[in-house]
Length: 363
Image 1: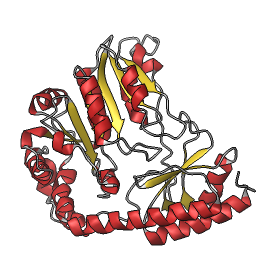
Image 2: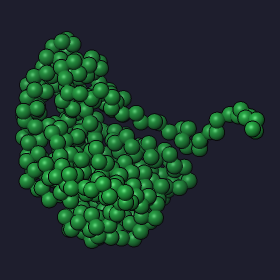
Image 3: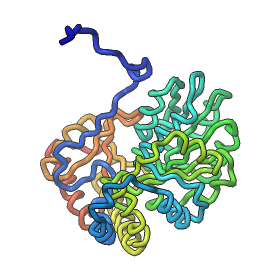
Image 4: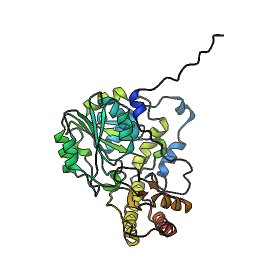
């Protein structure tokens, strides 16, 4: 037997050593889940019916997504070659970074925003540039336009943005697209259903526009990991070159058509969230808790120095919330997902108790 020679563990690339790891607090998530902006109820019952129809032999085959991509394209009034299904929007962001970012390139996005932009961007040899937020968290159009350089290769705009819930107008997005014709502009519409405005209709008309959607939020399929990218066919050619052909699993592909077909369930859930959001915003106003305007299924509130105590007090009451105080410009902030009207009545009652328990006083 050959002698084992102990050596130092091989080191990863320098970019990986520099990147900030993302460790979401996913352990012990029992209770009312207002921490990850998921559907707080369930997926459509038709999805469970689709799962029940899956045979054992189906799981022995590699997944084929082209037929489901064609259905998604029809649903969105796009061409099949303009749609790429991904393993959540996380994979979509990763593939975009791997496709377009090289040494000397720049990846640009407003801050604060979705953490995975920075995570996947910093895993390349490109420079990650975050545009600082405005005091009111409104879309920083002037700052973003000023930050664009000839080296800018990828720009990401979450619309609505997380964790703030603020939005960019169609005209503002067009200004960015026009200012950076040499860059790909990703408009991440993960929370589109709670906002209702989109630039999806511009896909294929504007050559540098890519739109992302997720099926984790309104559709309630977070556990199946399903996202998509809509882009001109020429861009999709390169994205398909980079992406794994089997990254979207057979169970997800079998369930997505059922979820898309149940429009009544989707509209019921979105309607519940919008009604609950209106009630929650008013409830927060009555409590005197500072908040920002939102068009998403969550609200960002300012608790202040006692933000961690508040999160813990809510947890003791069976309500999970997300401390966002480490995000740029978000010191003392907590984000709360909006669920159904019944759920949010429970959440607001717990919130009043938690604020009293920690001795919080309105400014």
